[in-house]
Length: 565
Image (cartoon, rainbow, N blue to C red):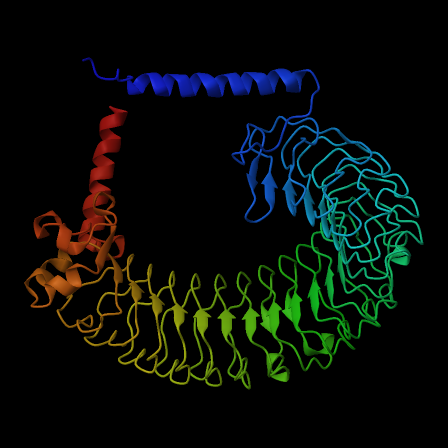
């Protein structure tokens, strides 16, 4: 008797592929004829969407071809994602029978029209509506009238220009309004009068040139105003005096010149002020006077040349201050000491050549100090004496030639120290010994030749960068061999490392020493390469010697004479 016939497995695969092709063709055909695609089938998946009933989430952004809201969305859906499709309009009752929706994502479509009543039926659930990156040029009065629970409305990167009073009517719970990247240069007074909960207003990159037609429309109770990336070149005295609840103000990237005293009058609650990427050359006397709640001040990427104490008032909550990338060459003595609560100071990328003793006195709470990319040559031995809680100090990319003995004697809680890209030729004995909590030490690209044994005997040290230094006389005891935390020592792998192969602890050291140079050994571990491949670098020009220069000159003269013949 003949047994049951076996079917070739490949025929199953072919049939499955054929069935899927038919599904896709059917979907494309119906979609081309204007029929709404179906979101979910019994498997919870379709060509258009993925439906997760466990978290009541439907995502329809896989195909990117939807031109209408799909049918068949489960009625218990809470999160609907239609991002990145080709919807051009939203008709009335576009989301009918989806009364449990809390969030709708319609970003990155081509929506240019929203019919009145498009969101009807969502009044008892919807809290977030995302319409960013579409083609909206206007919004009808009443568009959002029946959305009393929405607290976030995203309209950024559209083409909105003129907004009418009443357009946001009904959004009584709206807290955050995102209008970034539109063409809004004026706002009519009363446009936000229907929004009693509005606290955060984003208006970056709208081409706003004057605040005279913007600020009067904003409610006095807003707490965040973001105006970065506009064309505001002038601020009047008392410009923000109405906003006594304002906590955050961003004026970055506007082309602002010097500000007059009194421009921030009345901002008694302001805690964060951003003035980055403008054209400010000086801070006038009393500019920040009255900002007693100020905790963060950022004036990066401007043209300041000095910092004076008379620009400031009493700021008992000052925590973060950043003047990175200016032209600062002078800091008034005692300026920072007036603010003992400072936790972070950023003075990177300026023109500082020296820092007098006392510059950082009384800053026991300071965690982060950035002094990279200046022109510092010397450091006072007591410069960091009061920084007993400092976590990170960065001194890279200066012209520091020596580190005074005892420079880090008080910074016992330091975890990160970068002194890379300087002109340091030697390290004082025990310079790092107080740093028992140090994790990362950057010394790369200096001129260090000899390092005393035990210099890096720090129990918590994890990484040391020494590449770009002409190290010589490397000994077995230069690095700790019992510190199991140490995992990376970056160096230039030259013939100077050959003696290390005979160290009793080579297995430990060799597995942690990583070659940064030469290129052919880049990222190799020392224990992975033969000592025979380690070569001595070419002599430095500084060591070429008089005889060498005379010989070189002779060769040049001979070559020149040969060419002339």
